[in-house]
Image (tube, rainbow, N blue to C red; front, side):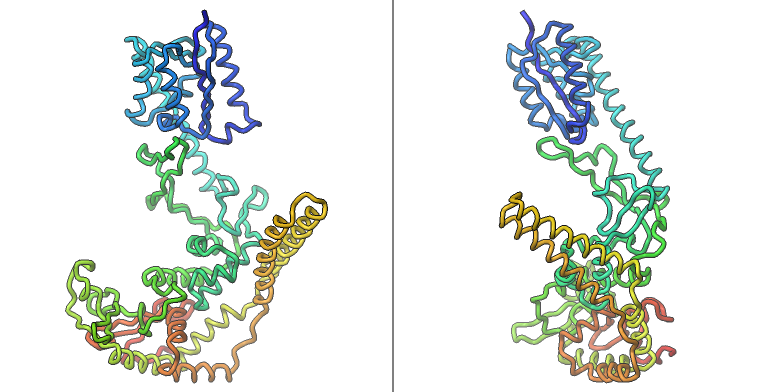
Length: 516
C-alpha cells in the first residue's frame, strides 16, 4: 500500500512562477521522481509563490499543509530541496520543524527521507535549516553587491518601474529625460513662481499631487543621481504581509561613505540653483502646512512667515475670547511642546502688522534689491526652452494623438464598447491638454522694460495696501521669514538664489541697502 504525501512547491517571487520560467516544472519533476523511488502517492500538491523562505509560517498554504499533516492518512511531505521548506532568519522560524516532529511526518528529499522526530533527524534537520538560512543571506549579499556595483558605475540595477517620473534609462543611451519630463519642468516653474499648492500644480501639470512631494525632491532633475538611502537588509528589516507574501524592506539612511552622487545627465531639467530654491520653499511649506489648503483664509497676513528673535521658534497666532488677535511665540504658548518657555510677550496683530507693512514698503522699493528680483525673474521665465525640451513635448503630443486614433479604431472595429472608449479618450484628452499648455507656456517672455520695472516699484510701494492673498503669494515666492519679539522687528530674511548675495539674504531693519 502506497503512503500518502503532500507535495510542496515554493518559489520566492511571482516572476519565478511565470509560465516562461522552469522553476515550478523542475520542482514538480523532481518530486515525482522522489515519490516513485520511495513508493509514495501524492495526495495533494501545494504551490506557493511570492513567499520568502523566511516567512513560510505566515503563508495560508503552509498552515493548510500543517493541518493536513495532523491527519493520520498523511505520511510525509515531499520537496525538491530543504530550502523549499524554509530558509530561516530567526529561531522562531524553526517552529515549522516541530510540527513535523509532533505529527511524525517524514520529509522526503531526492537524497533521502528525514525523520525530524528522531535524534538524528533533529540534528540533520537543524543543520540543514541553518545552512539554508545562511545560503539565503549569501544570495542576498551577492545580489546586493552586484546591484551596488552597477549603481556606482552610474547604471540602473533595477527594472524600469523603479525609474523616477519622466526619466528613462537603457544601456546604449544611459540616463535621459522622457517626454513626460516637461511636466516636471513646469511643476518646478509653478512652484518657484509662487503657486506652492500641490493640488493646483498637480491640476495644471497632470501629475498626482501626492507624487509631487517626492518628484520635486529628486535631484535627478538637475542631472545628478544621488542615492543616500538603502534597504534594511538586517533580519529586523524583513517585512511580509499577513499572508506571508513579501513586503518591501524599509529604507534607511546610508552612512556618509556609502552615499553615491553621480552626474548622469549632462544638461539638467532645472538648474541646481532653482532646485535648491524649490527645496527651501517646500521646507517652509512643510513647516507651515496650513498654507497648502486652498480653502483656508487666515486673518493674519504674516501667518507662517514669523519666527521668534529670542528662541528661533515659530510664531503662532492666537485669538482670545474677545476676538482680539495676537502673534505669540510657540515656546510661550506651548512651552511643553517646545521644550522650554520663552519670555517673549504676546504681540497684538493690529500693532505688529503695520510695522511689518512699513518695513516691506521701505525695503522692497529699494531699486538695487528690485533689480536683483527682476533679473532672477527674467532668468527663470525669459530664457527660451531648449529645442530638446520642445521636441519632448511635441513627441508626447504626437504619441497621444496616435493613441487616440488606436482607441477610436478599436471602437469602430467592435473591440471595445462606448463606455470604455469614452474612459480612455478622457485620459488621453487630459494628457493632451497638459502638453499643449506646456507648448504655449514655453514661448519666450519679453525682457522686462523700464516701464515694467517702474510698475513693479510702484506695486511694492503700495505693499501695505495689497490684499492678503497678494501679500502671502509674494512672501511665499521669496520664502520670507521675519524675526520678531515683543512687538519689535529684528530682521527680515529673503531667499534670493543666483544673486550676488548669500542664498539667505538678511535685511535688518536699520541696515543699508544691498549693492546694485
